[in-house]
Amino acid sequence: MNKLTIIIPDRMKGERLDYAISEMLPDYSRSKISKWIKTGLVLNNNQPFKPKDKVGSSELISLRIDASDSTEWLPEKITLDIVYEDEDIIIINKPFGLVTHPGAGNLNGTLANGLLYYDSKLSQLDRSGIVHRLDKNTSGLMVIAKNQKSQKYLVEQLQTHSVQREYSAIVYGHMISGGSIDEPIGRDRKDRIKQAVINSGKNAITHYRVVNRFANHTHVKAILETGRTHQIRVHLSYIGHPLIGDPLYGGSVRFPKNASQNIKESLKKFNRQALHSKKLTLSHPRSGESLTWKVDPPIDMLDLLQTLDKFDSV
Image (cartoon, helix red, strand yellow):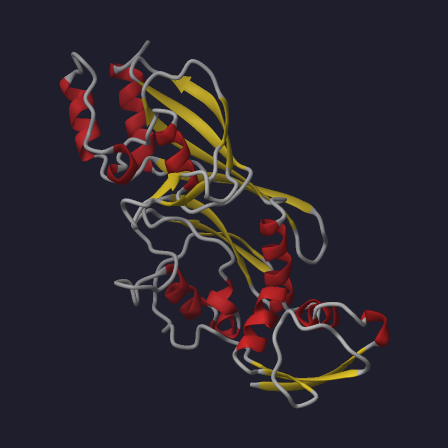
């Protein structure tokens, strides 16, 4: 744990203390600093305080910087599909079936455990450098920060929705055209495991475009403007086109009327939501350059698309 002392200048008098400290320490996010304040790791003139307290005159701030919130996560040798890496970021192509980070019921065998084995320095960062997540059974691109400055920069991009994320999805039903879904998402009042479109939820916007239409199914690309939990799954289900293989938001397997045996078998064996993070665009934390990565969907989605093209043609 590192110790640091700073004096907040008088020009910041009247500002919230958490904001002022984050301005003085640009390598750390405001949310991280607020957490440190609440846990007593930050003192003002040797006294505890609240993040919302205001700056007075010549405040002397002392910090005990907790470099890691993830020290209890253990490194494990897990194969990682690294698409890109430099001194600031790692771009991962996450396979479906891999949990992003440890939690209830998944204390090991996660992407975070694999990252700690791959690069032990990531233990110095919150969540092993992970700044966003994909559901266990969603595959595709994720960005990992390799240092504090990059992590703060990437989190800010995600909060301002300047990171562009495009997904491939295969849904039930024949879509006529694309569109946008602007509906708030929050915890389902009847089922705490699920999210739902509710008036009291957080703002959520998903844009979708048709890639290929089949007789009874549609291949779409979905572009996130916001990043709520299960957003694409909830939104597409809300408009009557749930993802194939998603029992949480789509119910049991749906067979089209007069479906061929090939279609029935393909739908029955597809046992995860048909969703893949295909394209990721962001500004590089160091250079500011806009960079884009693309990865094709995994073989299970490609096989399903091939079957639909052959046996569910319009």
